[in-house]
Image (cartoon, rainbow, N blue to C red; front, side, top):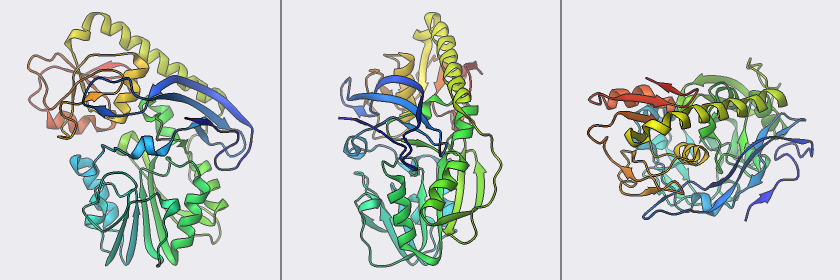
Length: 363
């Protein structure tokens, strides 16, 4: 069962304003047979005190991570990014949400601890199969990394408190995460899913970190997953650096939902005549959200992950295949942030590409 939050996950204010809802969406999964799955609400609320945009409900974590499908090593763009981060780390290194161990593979550390609560066993480091908040270790770390998991937290304060506790006095915490500004500017409805409980701006990140004894001393922007921040933090000294970004209030956030709905309507009108010619690309969590929100069913979805071949996207009954069918006229890309890489990989495909993020477009 889901539970609706009564106060902000970070500052505990009860001044939460409803921004919009996608309705009840099935938790992302890939099944042997068509299945409706477990449906839970995807509703966003905004905290007027600390400015954190967040889901209004918590979904049981075991439903989200017991069977986890994502593997970092499959995407060369992700591998390159994780290699860059890994090479920054030395000494004792804890990687939270280590996935298949790709980042740790490139770490220069002499001791590597892979904290990964899902069914995926990392190929590098000592595997600790537990949520970070519940981990008990005997040493402090020179480097702690958390890539694409800082927004998955029912209790963000406890997570950062634990970082502070295990970070050595001169240690560095590196977090990379999709953030609010690129999501809003790119109309990225696919970023909204049951895993992603928080949608941080830099301002709300500073609040979270400083509240729990850390400060941000460096920020790097990149295009990973459509737009991410790479955050470098340490024990609190004088306060976090200034970082310019666009700020969003209630009205701007509600306008995001209006644009997303317009994109959906434009695409649905296109599908009236062209759905039989349509194939999806990228069987991802983003795809699960978009397919269900758009109400699209029974199309094939191409994905190179061999574990997904022959499976079905939850609720939409879309079958996953490993190659673009001959004669495909329209290829609909879900993880839009990787479209340049996809086009390079599928250089022999002669049809048209479609994106619905940032807007409906035929390329």
